[in-house]
Image 1: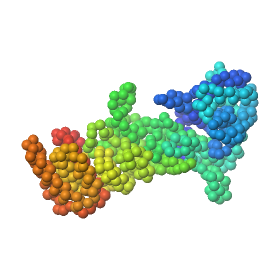
Image 2: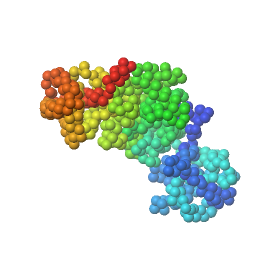
Image 3: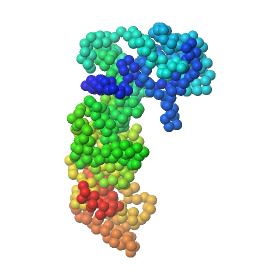
Image 4: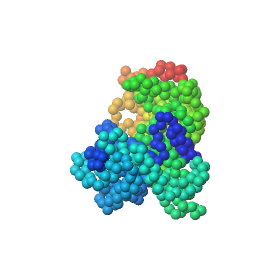
Amino acid sequence: MILQELNRYYERKAAEPDTAIPAYGSSVENISFALVLGDNGELLNVEDLRLQEGKQLRPRKMVVPAAEKKANGIKPNFLWDSTSYVLGLDDKGKQERTDKCHKAFVQQVRTFCAAEDPGLKAIIFFYDHDFRTITTLPNWVDICGANLVFRLSGTPGFIHDRAAARKAWEQCLGQREAATIGQCLVSGEDEQPLARLHPSIKGVRGSQQGGADIVSFNKQSFESYGKEQGANAPISQKATFNYVTALNTLLAIDSRQKVVVGDTTIVFWAECRSVAEELFADLFAPDESRVKPVAADDDQQTAGKILHLLTSLRSGKRAVDIIPELDESVRFYILGLAPNASRLSIRFWMASTVGNFLKNIGEHFRHLEIVRQYDSEPEFPPLWRLLCQTATLGKSENVLPVLAGGMTKAMLNGGLYPQSLLAAVLGRIRAEREVGYFRAALLKAFLVRNKQMEISMYYDPSRKEVPYLLGGLFAVLEKAQADAIPGATATMKDRFFASAPATPARVFPMLLKNAANHIAKLRKDPAKTGWAINLEKSIQDSVAHLAHFPPTMSLEDQGLFMIGYYQRMKDFYTSKNTTANTTEEN
């Protein structure tokens, strides 16, 4: 199913009049320099093709004859390759192997580039000259090891793009290793040459630099039913090229159809051209900073539309009401990939309609909705920022892979959040003694979706569950201490925030005793007497609804405790008029 849909995506993109996707027999590779040759093959110049990105120079993405999958073998690419193959020069310290690579490259050139074409002839003549003086160039350090192409001086374009070179490449491609003939598993066509080795997939975060595989065999134990490697997964060479090219296009650095969450790289596409492909990245990982004034009016309008769309989806409205040109019935595909040594793991695969995915995303943000601690915090928190709240030091590389994959699936398919989410969030709260907006939102979403609890966006004084009351009570006691002893070096939050929700019966009697001293101190200050009375009433209201302090609380109850604490603490610093107005609007 995955390969079939990727194959269809390639065919759709290839049929578009303005397509930039490589044709069969070519691939997009990183090219850094061009060897500029005279008609007689003399090396006239080494042209730097790299592009400036910030303070660094990056190789240029260029369509070239399809790259060979080399592994540990010696297989030259056609009319382009690294300096090891093109020049027989590198800094790897294995000159014997480098000489073999260079010999294979030159042999391929002399075999297939015998046409009467000035460009091809120049390359052949090039190897009759002494080109090793290139090592004396000031930028040889940059050239060494980089990928090179050829250019004929005074002629636009590169030699591998010339008509004669393309014809020579077709001959070379046809004479490569003979393929097994069979029925293609992807297209269903009979009598097709089957691919033995599949090109590498590049662009998955954390995978090997040279790329990794989705389909591969490297042991005889995989040759079931007497079939050789490759015939065990019979996919034609053309279908193999199509699905790999489509996936590499989706995974490109500048792709807008790629999102990274934890160790999972997610790509997505529609069965036909759809505005959903352009909007989904913003829906998946919204960034409200884009709503701020930007240089282009179009960008500002797009960001505003996205925020409006998210707001509508969260309230249960249909996306088509905001974006009339959006067809909600279009099939949409989402693929999650994770690194696994030289291979790629399929973390998840989802296929549904655009409308169904948008509905689930809206429900996800509705469950997350809770009062923000600061106005600068995003109203629609990106998934990666939420997941960082579960990781040590808040670093994305420390996010548990299973948790990241489970959260992504729950967001997209409307299923339950991973059970490990609750423990992960509470664990970070205990370690750092801080709840915060993102963690409170995660706790609320988990309890609402997984435990079918009803939790309001703001502090609810009418809520009488023991864990919620205890969380609010802890906030009141903390506020009393902070007002009575400003700047205390060791606060009750520092000492008891981890143990209070776990063992309330051991902690709260002591905290109430200390609170009496704090309120007594506040009463002595004429300017704070009224505030002391209010705090005392808040404590009495909470205790009045507690028959006893429970000896322990479950993780679900501890989550509700943290929400009660967060909302009550936020309530202390929120204007009651503002809260009332916001509640009426919602």
